[in-house]
Image 1 (cartoon, rainbow, N blue to C red):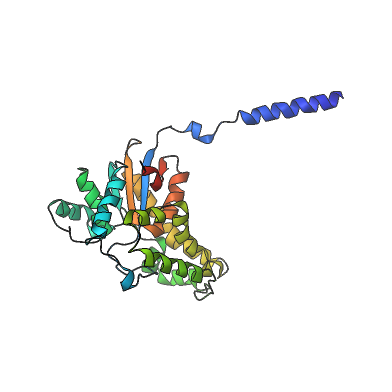
Image 2 (image 1 turned 120 degrees about the horizontal axis):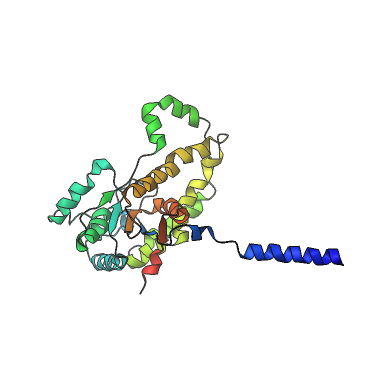
Length: 279
C-alpha cells in the first residue's frame, strides 16, 4: 500500500512538472515582424508555368468588371498596412528603377501583378522602395558551373513516371480557370490564399518522379524548387530591419506553401493569414 502511495505521489509530481513546462515561444521576443504572403496567378498570363490558362478563360484586370474588382482587392490588401513590399523579381528586372518609373506614370497599363499590386500599393501608401527578392536555385547554379555533375546527381530519375494525382489536379485547375471570369477577383485570391490553397500547389511537387532514382528524385526537389524558396526566404531576412515592420510578399502562388512553412516556423516572423484582414 505504501509503495502504491509513493507511486501516486511520483505520478502526481511528474504530471505537475509537465503542466509547468513552458512553451518555447515564451523564450523568444513577443513581438515578431508580421508578414502577409499574397499568392497570385500571373495577371498578364505570360505562359511560363507548367499549367497554362486557356485563352477563353483569361481575364483582363485593366477592363471592367475586373478593373473595379482589382481596386477592391488592392483596398483589401492595404488593410494590412505594409511598411515594406517585396515582389517576385530578380536583380536583372531592376525593381527599384521600374518603381521610380512607375511613380512617374509609367507601366500603369501593364497587367503584371508586380505593378498592379506591388507598386500600386507601395505608391498609394507613400513607400519609397519595392524589393525584388526572387532567386535562382542551386540546381541552376550547378547546371551552369558543372553540368556533368548535375547529370550524375539526377540521371536515375524517371521523369516519365506515372503521376496518378496529376489528372485530379488538372481537373481542379480547369475548374478554377473556368470560374475566373465569374468569381470576384478578391474572392478568387482569397481562395488561393488559404492553407489548403497554398499546399495544393506544392503538393504536386511531392508526387510522380520525386520517388524515383534511388533518392535522386528527392534530391532534385531539394536543390531545385525547395532550395529556390529557401533562398527567397533568406533574402527576406536580409531586408528585415526590426520587428515593427509589416512586410507584404507578392509572389506566384506556387511559392506560397514553402514560404508559409518557413515563416510559421521562424522565431523572427509572424505569418498573417490573408483572411484575417476581414473587417
